[in-house]
Amino acid sequence: MSFSHSSMTWIPFLFRLLLIPCSLEPTLELPEPSDMAESYYLSGNLIWVFATLWGFFVPALFLFSGLSAKLRKFATDRTQNWLASFALYFLGFWIFLNVLDLPLNYFAGYVREHVYLLSEQTFGKWLADHLKGFVIGGFLTLLSLSVPYWLIRRAPRGWWLITGILAIPYFFLLLMITPIWIEPLFNHFGPMQNKALEKKIVQLAERAGIEADKVFEVNKSVDTKKMNAYATGFLGTKRIVLWDTLLARLTDDEVLSVMGHEMGHFVLHHVAQGILVYSLLTLLCLYFIHWASGPLLARYGEKFGFHSIGDFASLPLLMLLLQFFSFVVTPPGLAFSRHLEHEADRFGLELTRDNYSAMSAEVKFIAKDLAYPWPNRWIKWLRSSHPPAGERFNFYLHYRPWEQGKPLRYSSYFHGSVESPSASP
Image 1 (cartoon, one colour):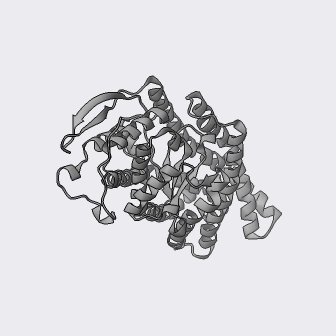
Image 2: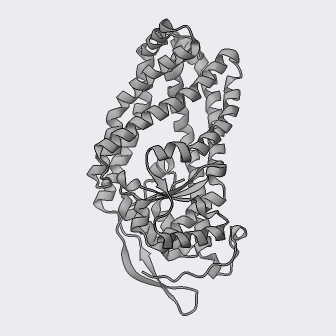
Image 3: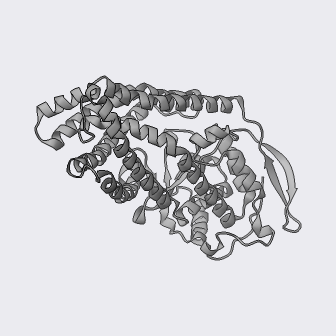
């Protein structure tokens, strides 16, 4: 899970008296967003609206034009083997889908990032990564789709339940192999380069009960100027990953505050919780597809060119139903994600007890990543996987139970004691 933030400049030189006797801690004030940050926020929302509508339009075009049925006929005319014909159909559909999506992906992922000075990625690197994603995504999608289509043929009433159950180990397997087999195809992952900082991270990790060899540095500067860190993996592949852009722009104390957040995800098993919730939503989605496809095929089957959900020409119909279901369940899913991020923030503060560094890191995230500190509540509800930067900043400012003699929520996870950090501007 990432530690993403919004964008703005900051105003120092405000001071607040701590409850620690005879000490002053400089604090920061959250200013209004810059014109560029506001423009980036608005353009991102417009792209999201267009991409959402596009996600309905493309499969509908493929479905109502009869292209899906024609492509299925082309595939079955070439081979009588069911798996081979499905793979041939899927290849044609996958190419069609990605060609139509290419202009949007190029504008949103390459042009826009360069216009807002958030990337110096070369076109060659972007194209190479895009092609890798096309191949890897196609293979994994073909693998995951072949199972439910095979099950529909043999268990037409219970295929959705069996597929939903099988999805749980599949998601965990994917989570386990992604850090070691997939992500390294796009960027180089290795140990920390700054050994002095690595020693501090090791000490913090030991206090959180995490093995030191679970922290990696990745060279994301070839792709973006944004900063990030995230927890990923499962069982032996669990790890915390720091982008080199983050390490280059934050002070050691600020990096440790970010690490405290990511260690919270790690220790509190947030990644596994997310997978379990996603698995439950997948099961509900499969049932919705099973329930809704019958009436739709009864009414539009002639126009579609097929009458059974087990006909793999129904793939665009599945995509349409999935898009609709996702739009409905995304807000509560995002609310759950924001809850996990908030608790990771709490864990990080209790672990480091360094509110100033958390605030100053947040301000740098805001300035460097051009995010918006106070998004519209509808945008937050529909798009935000993290609490808005303004909310996080205020939480960092006020959450200090250790100064008030109150119990810490996550103290049972900590090993040893923590020294009160020396606040320095």
